[in-house]
Amino acid sequence: MFDFLQTVLIVLIIALVIFAFLGFKIVRHSETMVIERLGRYDRTLQSGVNIIWPIVDRPRTVHWRYTEAGPDNRPYHITRSTARIDLRETVYDFPRQNVITRDNVAILINALVYFQINDPMRAVYEINNLPDAIEKLTQTTLRNIIGELDLDESLVSRDTINKKLGLILDEATHKWGVKVNRVELQDITPPADVQHAMEKQMRAERERRAQILSAEGSKGAAILEAEGIREAQIQKAEGEKQSNILRAEGEAQAIERLAAAQSAALSQVAGSLNGTTDPASFLIAMRYVETLKEISSGGPQTKLVYLPYEATGLLGALGGIKDLFQHNTSAPLPAPRPPLPGKLPPAPPQA
Image (cartoon, rainbow, N blue to C red; front, side, top):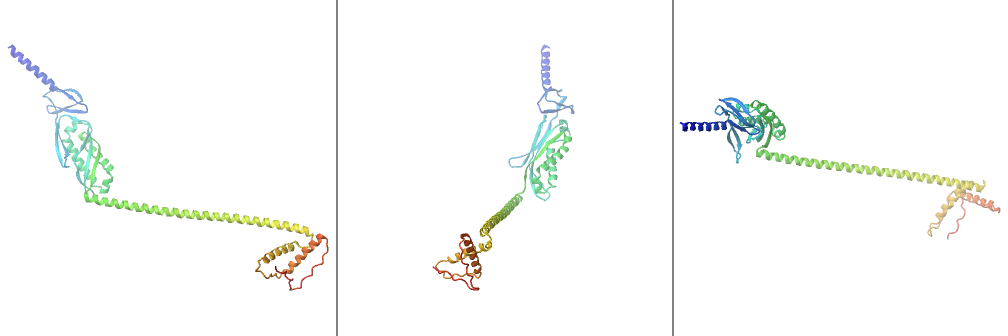
């Protein structure tokens, strides 16, 4: 009897230990568990130590299927069963998919989806397979967005595509208790022939830009050279103008000073003549004598000296000079005999 009671007690103790062990649930940080009581949702466990009733309370196990790309870029499916739901932000990289643009070009697009579970209960009960649903929704939405764009717009509008795709996915997954933070297009690959045509177009465009830049450079250089020549000619003309003005001013001043000097000389000569002879005639006579001197000094080849027809005026002026000298020396001299009309006095003998 005692042995039977002892055995029962040991069995009860072992059952209590097992029951207590099954009733303690330790949940790590950023994780949670959905608890069902008799097949119905009861509560969501928080991080730390939690106590449940074994057999009556059971964690809900979820089966999520992921599609990943293998080494040969072929998609393969992975199914994971877990009772713990990760509350951290998850990056889902599903394989490439074929998308047709508005101009009927088939391209390959690889997208990344960043999502986070905010309500574990909805993520478990509102959708059967959350990762697979997000993948399919992303693919269909991406086809719709790319189908409205041309190839060139698809290549240059990644930011716009990311924003539109993120807004649509976030709105659609809200009832699943999921927050889609962002969507990124990782790669856009056109067909090989399209890439070759794009390379040719890019090369031709670069050559065209180079030719345009070269032509603009030549045009600018020609314009600058013409402007430089024009400025140089303008400066040269301005310099010549200033030089001519200064030269003319100098000549005018020289003429003025020479006239002033001649006027002063005439005044002095007039004062010396005391009215006996016209000063102008005297000055003309002196100039005439100087001119005749230059004519007569032509060298040994000069044989004849021609006197102008107006030599009578010269002789008259010489007579005035003679009278002046006679007046100054007070020695009377016989008056010069006037020359006959139309005849010239004899020329002095040549050396």
